[in-house]
Amino acid sequence: MATLAPKREIFAWAMYDVANQAYTTVVISFIYSAFFVTYIVPDSYRWQDGYWSMALIGSTILAMLLSPWIGQRIDEGASKKRLLAWSTLVCAAFTSALIWVSPGDVWLGVALILVTNTAWMLGEAIISSFLPDIAKRSQMGLISGIGWGVGYIGGLISMVLVTIVLVTANPEQQPELYISQNQWSMFAISVYFVLFALPTFILLKDRRRPVLARHQRLSWRSSLNIQLLRQNQPILWRFFMAFVFYMAGVQTVIKFIGIYSTGELGLTQADLVGVFLATQFSAMGGALAFGFVEHRIGARPTLFAVIAIWLVAIVAMYMLPTLVAWSGIDVAHLFMGVALLAGTGIGAIQSSSRSLVGQLTSARLGGSAFGWWGVFNRLAMLMAASFGIVADIFSRQSALLMVIGFFLAGGVLLLRVPLQEGQRQAEQEDAH
Image (cartoon, rainbow, N blue to C red):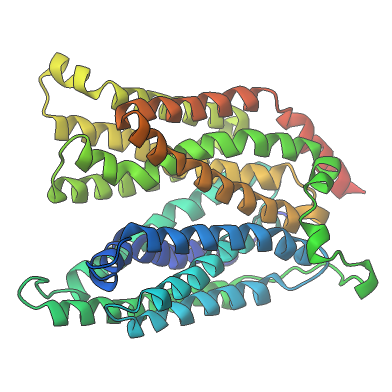
């Protein structure tokens, strides 16, 4: 287990979060997803959102299948920087190829998004596996919080780049120019990704373990054997059981906050922009602040505090009509307050969870641990998709009860995880 790395390496590691946030913010969450559904998929097609869902679900499953194998290769001595370089270049190259996706090229767009999103998710797990190399256990929460916090700056920069600098045409008056500008913005995002990731590849050291002989390496199929995780890292396994539930709650809010705020509360597009900015800034502040809190009081109380914040935010969202009637505050302004609270928890809970994986893992098994962290992160995304089904069967308001259930289940399961014992065991294994 490392001591605290030089500041230049911590800076380099955090810069990758700044770089890769451009892709997920612009391509997946806000800009290209809406552009694809509205302009690439013809109106005559039976499905609209379905094609985008295919790409996301397909890439999530691919990442879940590949993450444990990538992690195992790291434990066997593969170069983290080389693997990270491959995932970065594949993501950037295929993102730039979106410039060739024109209206009607639906399957080309689906294929490119499937590849780019898979590569991005693998890169997220690989960069996280550097955390035990640059910080000792007591400092992981602080360093993880810094990385996650400054990453939101990358999301803001890329949104400004696309929405203000690059895409300026009026879609109704200049539809062809508007389409062209959105296509070229994907090329710009790929360049942004590579440029902002350069400090990572230049300054961050690749502390490799000795390479195992070929006959000692596990096969791809063996790396997916979840029973080995339960046997070799039982406390980490129990943490993942809690993590997948509360993370499903987080992912539900991230994926459906736009649909809920417009469809259920009637917020305008301008209101949504305000909600986005509020959550971005509060998420950045939450990740940074709780990184310092975790450094002071430890991971366990920090995570429980963040889960409590989430429960307050979701309960407030569920009771929003009552709160509006009781307070007399406009629904948009009241929802903005709830969004600020939820945003504080978004960055903090992801940052603290990432650091805890490193704290519960010995250096020998760090790669596979973060590979499985990627798997359970993606599983939480798939669980979050059930919100839409529940909302259609009952109502969006009723579906919020499911989200509350996710956080409660995660909190209860986390109570049963002996985190301090897991940290001591990992330290003892590193000492031998």
